[in-house]
Image 1: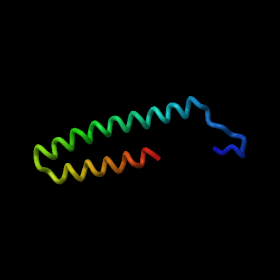
Image 2 (image 1 turned 90 degrees about the horizontal axis):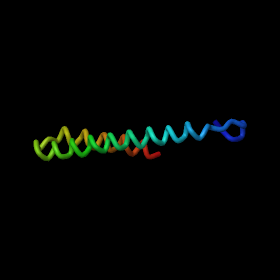
Image 3 (image 1 turned 90 degrees about the vertical axis):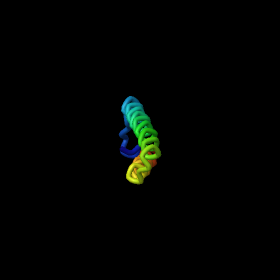
Image 4 (image 1 turned 135 degrees about the vertical axis):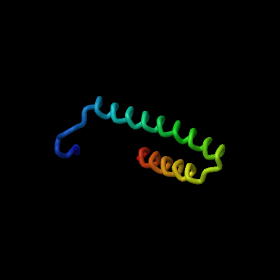
Length: 63
Protein backbone atom coordinates (compact mmCIF):
# COMPACT_ATOMS: atom_id res chain seq x y z
CA UNK A 1 0.00 0.00 0.00
CA UNK A 2 1.37 3.36 -0.86
CA UNK A 3 0.66 6.84 0.39
CA UNK A 4 0.04 8.12 -3.13
CA UNK A 5 -3.02 5.87 -3.51
CA UNK A 6 -4.50 7.23 -0.28
CA UNK A 7 -4.30 3.86 1.47
CA UNK A 8 -2.60 3.54 4.84
CA UNK A 9 -1.87 0.52 6.99
CA UNK A 10 -3.51 0.35 10.39
CA UNK A 11 -0.90 0.80 13.13
CA UNK A 12 -2.22 -2.27 14.96
CA UNK A 13 -1.34 -4.37 11.89
CA UNK A 14 2.18 -2.96 11.85
CA UNK A 15 2.66 -3.57 15.58
CA UNK A 16 1.49 -7.16 15.24
CA UNK A 17 3.86 -7.73 12.36
CA UNK A 18 6.78 -6.38 14.38
CA UNK A 19 5.75 -8.52 17.34
CA UNK A 20 5.61 -11.63 15.15
CA UNK A 21 9.03 -10.90 13.69
CA UNK A 22 10.58 -10.37 17.12
CA UNK A 23 8.97 -13.56 18.42
CA UNK A 24 10.31 -15.55 15.49
CA UNK A 25 13.79 -14.06 15.96
CA UNK A 26 13.71 -14.97 19.65
CA UNK A 27 12.65 -18.53 18.89
CA UNK A 28 15.31 -18.92 16.22
CA UNK A 29 18.02 -17.54 18.52
CA UNK A 30 17.11 -20.16 21.15
CA UNK A 31 17.41 -22.91 18.54
CA UNK A 32 20.76 -21.49 17.38
CA UNK A 33 22.17 -21.59 20.91
CA UNK A 34 20.98 -25.16 21.44
CA UNK A 35 22.33 -26.37 18.09
CA UNK A 36 25.64 -24.57 18.54
CA UNK A 37 26.12 -26.17 21.95
CA UNK A 38 25.18 -29.61 20.58
CA UNK A 39 27.56 -29.16 17.63
CA UNK A 40 30.40 -28.61 20.10
CA UNK A 41 29.36 -31.54 22.28
CA UNK A 42 29.11 -33.97 19.36
CA UNK A 43 31.67 -32.34 17.05
CA UNK A 44 29.03 -32.22 14.30
CA UNK A 45 29.59 -30.20 11.13
CA UNK A 46 25.97 -30.87 10.09
CA UNK A 47 24.69 -28.99 13.13
CA UNK A 48 27.07 -26.12 12.39
CA UNK A 49 25.61 -25.86 8.90
CA UNK A 50 22.08 -25.78 10.33
CA UNK A 51 23.13 -22.98 12.69
CA UNK A 52 24.50 -20.99 9.75
CA UNK A 53 21.31 -21.57 7.76
CA UNK A 54 19.15 -20.33 10.64
CA UNK A 55 21.43 -17.31 11.08
CA UNK A 56 20.90 -16.45 7.42
CA UNK A 57 17.13 -16.74 7.91
CA UNK A 58 17.39 -14.32 10.85
CA UNK A 59 19.32 -11.86 8.69
CA UNK A 60 16.39 -11.88 6.26
CA UNK A 61 13.98 -11.09 9.11
CA UNK A 62 15.91 -7.92 10.00
CA UNK A 63 15.08 -6.26 6.69
